[in-house]
Length: 437
Image (cartoon, rainbow, N blue to C red; front, side):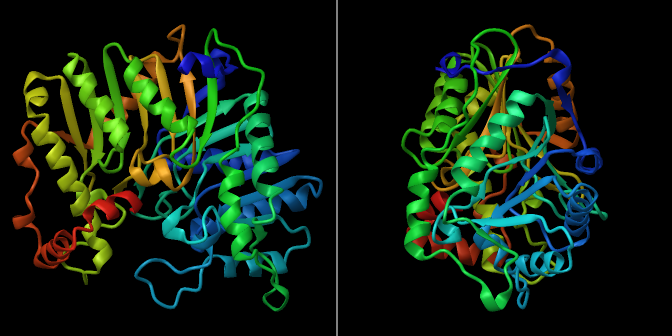
């Protein structure tokens, strides 16, 4: 199945690794400054904070220097028009966009993409920073924590691919299926004359988005990269590629995910992989490295129960597969580094085929969000050592689990967490929550 997808040929020096948030930010700003024809920024959000504003100012400076430069910023529509969770009074990032563009002599295009009619039903999780003939790919959004602007950072993966064919394919897909759609609107419209898409247009948008695909002249031999996009449960090429990657692996899988909540098809494929005597390394964030973790010395809110829910899912999986942990087939690594958080996603199979993605590999990503990824086929092994070095870098702040009992039980959680989780169990809502969070 993976071979049939085909790909875009890549030279050995076309792929490079940006291992830290600082490297990512520095490279992104450099490429923006050097841009000559086109910039597309696609992320869940560009925050109204120091780092987010720095990126926006850089984009506007590039446009002012070269008015012919096309600059498009795509963010999730609903996320841009609300405040941060738990922060009352924040009016949303679009207020910043509106102010900046109102002052600009050469405005840039910042649009909101409403994948679904409500944020909890699906968001824009399409990743990629396409600048001329370069693609910088990361699961990161743009704010202080993702770019390590201050003391705290959110760890992610960052890759740069220099390929005109790849950049063109990704750019044309966005222009055709997103920017040209009537559901997509400017987030910089003056308040007095603002026109937003109606509900029916937004509802039908998902049907049009489900048909989105990257088009390119495909080759099925040699070192290559395959861009893949997917939305919804049916005929989702990205989901199929993930399961195909697991099923095709002959020896070893290396998996990164912020939390462990695999969809049923992926869970079955992983279990089958272990039963066949093959090896899996999983690097997952400790609950304290989750975006929504609330330290016990801070006021608790319901959203703070999420990391604990994910941890219990991991505990059940580890308990079920304890035999594989003891045999050395299954290695589960928990990532934890001071107050920082973990946001890595992706799969490597047999050190040969690598999925670089922003997808969380969970039911929500597989059914609700617009996701994409780059499937790298390293036929000659030219990038094997570089991927190995990246994996060692990822493992630097991890601790391996030797027994499922190392993971805490519900009884050991703080009282507010126990109260929320027990309520969820009584209502039998845990199944539903795992599908949408």
